[in-house]
Image (cartoon, rainbow, N blue to C red; front, side):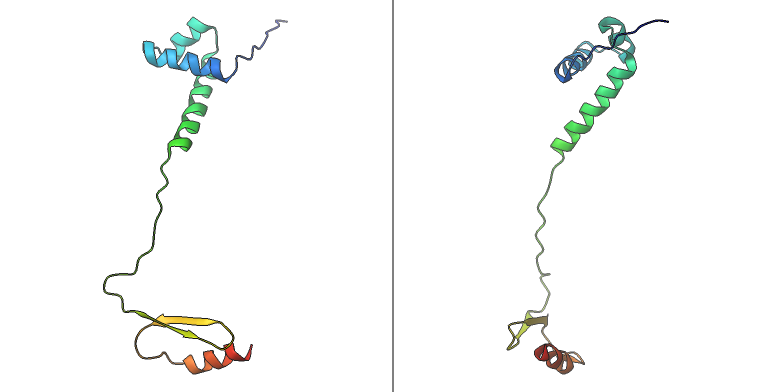
Length: 106
């Protein structure tokens, strides 16, 4: 029965090894032979660090909704209860009276 010891090198050590790989143009197999770290471990750390880097550098863009240039101005009805109804300018829609009556009764 062989006893194999597992050595934890830490994040900084894997980052340094992978930076060495990039700098020297090594394959994972070559770096594994050179460092003594299993190839699968190096690949796993490379994927993990790439995911983390991508998540940190993913751009977030603020989107601000603006009315269309040709949109008609809106009409806002303020009810006695403090509620308001916003609707596009133009003739009132069918059922507006019933809606206002219902909301005012609440």
